[in-house]
Image (cartoon, rainbow, N blue to C red; front, side, top):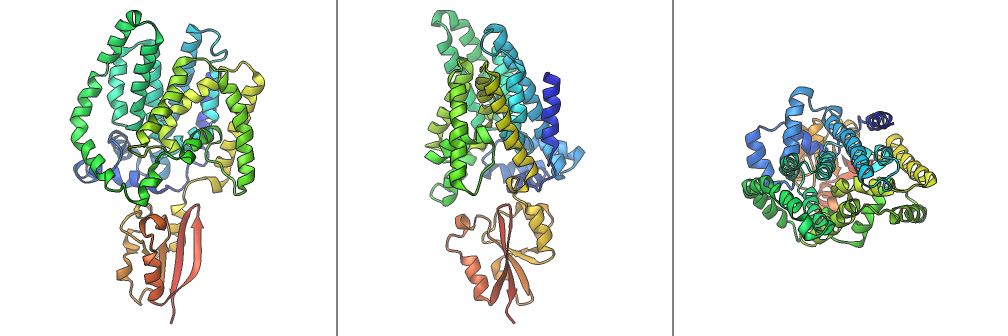
Length: 439
């Protein structure tokens, strides 16, 4: 059965793979083309992520290129490996606690069909890689393979900072597991296995401190609120997206009703789960994330994708075939909406690039251009001050203009020059205004 599940997981992740890159994926595509000296000296100090994923894609792209599909294949590989590792964890749990998980293939099947995991297994970002590393780290922890565990910790840290929250979770879990006298040797091995991580942290700290300094500069801006501060909405979105992926509906009353019904089922099923490690992995990771987000905003659901396998391992403790079938149906429906309905897919920068053609493009500020640069429009991008009457038609980006141009100065400037808006184009959240000059 596990081979069937792996094939199913792979096939689902290949559907609709050739979507447009969205903004952050385009950043990945541009960054991996940089010389490594520029990457470390110019890009990394201003970014909020560690370097390893970018380096992996850099060397991958030297062989396979930087097309949309090529950039996303590594995430598919990490996604499928995560499915298999969840199966191994379930088998290990079953071998120790026979009644915990009756069918080890079930959590793997849940993850294989998960709309959220499919989405991020198709994204040229670090989240699928980090989720695999955390999941494999849990497996090594269960098997007490401390040498491999110690090697994987710094690799995880250099892939995604937030995911390293799994380490204090494991330390707390191990502390609570058995009496202090019995657990002393195991605790010692676990602590000693963190030495490579500590060395890596010290070596990387000069870069990390620059990133933190750069991040704190936006604390008083609207962008800070987008990154994921602690709000009731951000907390609620994590389990919501875990259950139904990125599917949403314009009818908010219907959306709320669906969420309430599905939540009641999932809460009932997960409430009967007893495996302590999975509860620590799921609950304590999110709690630590909430605490962290009071200081550094990280509380966006995709940053906690590494918790999703624990969510399905807990659900898989159900012995009811009915509830298992319901969870699978919810997964398949949410995955189907995403995979086959373009409205639930990524920002369509490729579509807007084709629509713009060879006309000039204005952005309110000197940022958010990476996607159009990837789609070879960099030579058409100008500042509003560079507009001349020779530009009979221009396009104005309205992408998150509320954050970068809250006074709407770019639009007012263009219209003050005598341009009329003749078209509003919206490509999955990528909004541009087309202007024509009044003769």
